[in-house]
Amino acid sequence: MKLYSLIAASLLFSPAAMPQQPFTIKGNVKGLSTPFVYLSYGTDNSYKTDSSAVKGGAFSFAGELTQPVMARIYTDKQSAMYGEGDMATFFIEPGDMTISGDKAHFDQLQLKGSASQKEQQELDAARKPVMAKLKPISNAYNKLNKEYMALHKARKSEAEMAPVKAKLDKLKEQMEPYYEQLEKIDMAFIDKHPNSYVAANLLRWRVSNMPLAEGEKYYSRMSPALQQSSDGRAIRKELDGLKMGSPGSMAHEFTKQDINGQTLSLASLRGKYVLLDFWASWCGPCRKGNPHLKTLYSKYKDKGLEIVGVSDDDRDLAAWKKAVEQDGIGIWRHVLRGLDMEKRMANQPNPDDISDYYGIHSLPTKILIDPQGKIIGRYGGGGEDDEAMDKKLASIFGAI
Image (cartoon, rainbow, N blue to C red):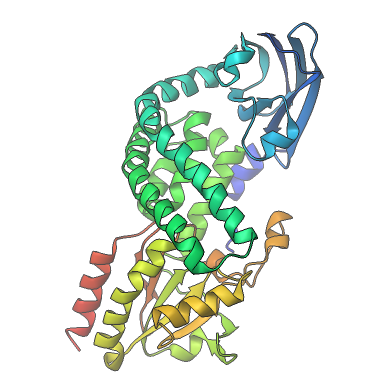
């Protein structure tokens, strides 16, 4: 991974140099009778959870922050791990804040005293009509997904799980238009509030699916202090990764054992056009796109096109091999990305992970590399669509 280029700015606005400031939260929730409530929020280098005893619905928290952060308040640790139970989310910040509301509507508790939370409320209000339409479909999907996971845990056959999976896929399709509407609302908010911590938090999760130039534009509008916030630094990291996998950069060279146990090095394919296909056996859109990839390969392989599948199935080799066989894509080479979840969860570097060198955060994503090893196309997350890929390949091989 490349080091950030803003060394001078890092010295001026590094997290260590940003002063810790105190915050307090005093809560009073009608009907709250649990012995404790819990508050979890991110700090510069970790995630902190605090608890407070409840007396007559009243509780309090105190701590220190360097910046506004997203926080969760909840009554049961176990349920919260699965996103269930009484829970509410807020943007907290240095200063004195209050929480009020009713236990019967815990997710609607009100936090006052935080300017960032006011911005979050503005965003929530804009999203509310879409969320109301999305919620019943999302609830149905979550319920059905639990059934699917139970079948998987019981080791049911694919044939037995197929009807449930088909229903899940249909629900996904129904949710997609609403997700697109939410994205438009989020981007309008980011445009309106370029120096908001709420906007930075949104951008952190949106930027990996933007073209590099668009992401850089939004980042450049942020103040130096916001750029050096935890979300700002995460955005910079995403952009640096995306840059390594975008047109104009030299492709990261890797050597892996392929699906047949043979050594494959990207360098050995110099002199040809190479399409890296980042996919997974569990990725529905990836699998649906394989027939089209087979058509492209058949059309251009004799003219100098190679395809290398880079799979996200490091923890399920059997599923990877089965998908390659079922989809008939063993006609080109396949390797695993090199994901090590233990290192990832421990926030440790993993130099064997190919995806990190290409800024891959969504599947499918395809990277087109020219005979000299330079990236000349990105299609999928943070790039153009498949139609643009088809036109690019036609322009290349139509001239050969």
